[in-house]
Length: 122
Image 1 (cartoon, rainbow, N blue to C red):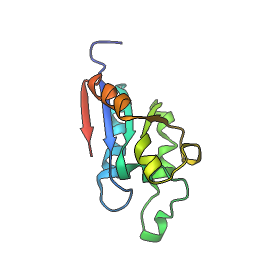
Image 2: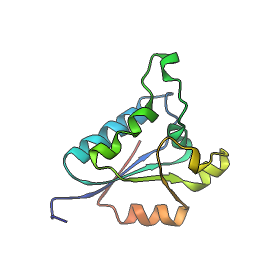
Image 3: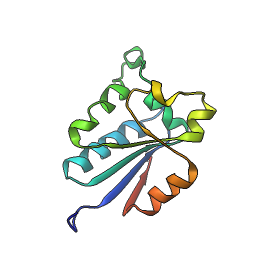
Image 4: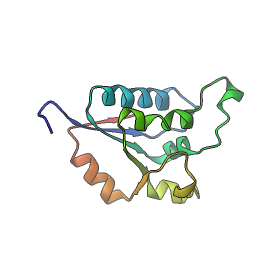
């Protein structure tokens, strides 16, 4: 890895359409990936709702976040993670999400954050 390539972790922790933070986080992830940074994208707390496949965003005149998550691989973003305790608390099955994610427990999440050069929490 070149010295200019940074390990960036983006943590999205809000429900998909209540605020603009989830969209902003997704935009930041894509922008960082375009500049060939080492990007990790974590869905924490209510942010795991962004991973649901059957979003009806058009009902509120918005674009589906889940649909855009599928494009992340085109940007080279392969490190997608979900908060295991948050999925369990919301009774969400990791196999039924819009994109494949690695489920992290609190220890693994802390390790990911500690190993990052910079962390963005939205």
